[in-house]
Length: 183
Image (cartoon, rainbow, N blue to C red; front, side, top):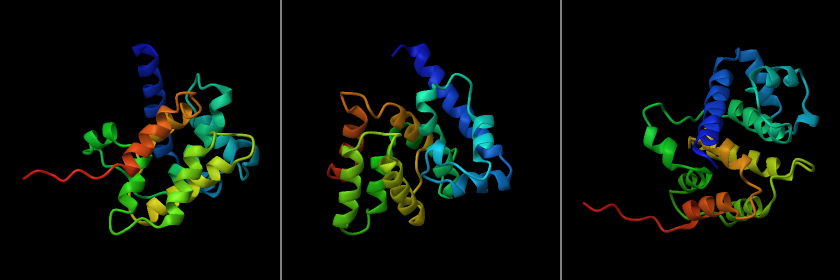
């Protein structure tokens, strides 16, 4: 990917979250009620809200991803602060889930949910992927652990790459042993 295309995607993503943040509370609530749904399952006026926030130039084949992320974003309260610039660059969803289980052992069923997600295609035909993602996002939010939303959106756009780079990055961040800080 060329640098100009990368910047273009980053600009679109930044503009998208800016638009979502400026939505009236009632419109955010409509998106929230559609959390984890695909576009074809949307209801309650969410299509109009979605399309007015969607940046120009987003591929139609990616619209379900952008919609799912918008609905999940409006569902959650935990956010990375603007001061956490380093975290915005360094974090992915594996990082988020690692922090969810930082205290004590990871429950086996959560590992199963993450493995199921990592082994799934980001499939907009059956919705399984977004259903699993919704469960994990809600869990993170219930524990007050933020999601790097722009990174999550970009990762999902790149999810079905044959090299599976996104899945490797998430697994590495989630499963790798924590390095002790040197004093």
